[in-house]
Image 1 (tube, rainbow, N blue to C red):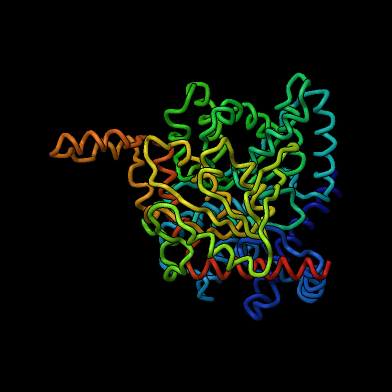
Image 2: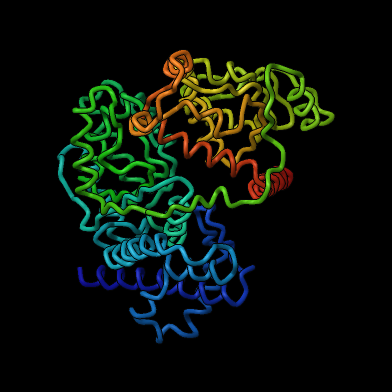
Length: 486
């Protein structure tokens, strides 16, 4: 037992030493490491040689004070000094302290939490999971997770990714968008149909694969998701899972005014019990502080051949034809026109039909660019289409896809008639009864959509910026090079 404890302590110690060495070397020569926060797995093979040489030279000098000086806070300061981030956001600094605290707490409890995939404790945890299939038992983690919420563009995702990227690559961890996570859960439930408690089995599989779950954009709008979240996460937490999540909504406002919300409320209590809740109160939307628009969002009244012409310019000499995109569980999505990684859709084909996140993920896996023709002004009459458009933009943003579209107005104008309950109370009455009647008819009062629209407007703005489109081009070039080398 004592030997295992000493061995585990050395592993934890060496992992933190590696990150300290990496930080020093990165400051000396940033090209030695890829520090972009949208990459969620380190190349451990290349790092190990640098690490071993540095360790042998200076292993005796490592102490816990040095460990405390590594992690998300140090990396955040490095990015500011390198000009990669803006300085002076006190709201982000306050949240960073919480993230740093969690980072250090996980480092101190890595053995107890069975985070290391290769350690003795990790192997015992996997063995315990197999036994738990026959003899249920609880092993709640001593470390509480973190729930970050705040307005759009305040840096929630960036901070979570910064935290995730500083963790050792051999830990059992996963970073995933909430939409994608729930699709994975429902897919697993389908596979375990017929067992007495499929949710318990699914939770066991997930916690066996990943002790630390980082879920981006936690937003509950689907009644099917709402009804299973409490039992799912109770099982996950009982299995020792630790949750880090980002959201635009405070826990108490999740699934607000949703169907059968009283059955969802226990999940909010579970969430608050297992996570420290932290609000990022910044009023700055960093997505809107990008450079001027590059011209992929076109305001057009009525239908025209304008977008089709731009689509043909994108595909070049390739010939567009109808295609199928694989989705999940054997389903396919019919693509009206596709070629050279680009897909063309009239708006009604993608957002007026009963499609969802799974279909949009399938689309993004097969095409890096979407030409969407005819985004309308949203209101009460097309609220469902607005929900789908919000989901589409979320999925495209998460996959760093490029959106080229025509719309009846600016991003702000297409969502202007979507309001929250609080906004509706603040709308001044019209002097003309006729105009008031028309406004009332098309005004959509929906809290979930009202909050989501701000995120969508912000993301549409960023997706049309020079910086975003340059990142998209780099991603395509990188993917093409991988295909050639393969």
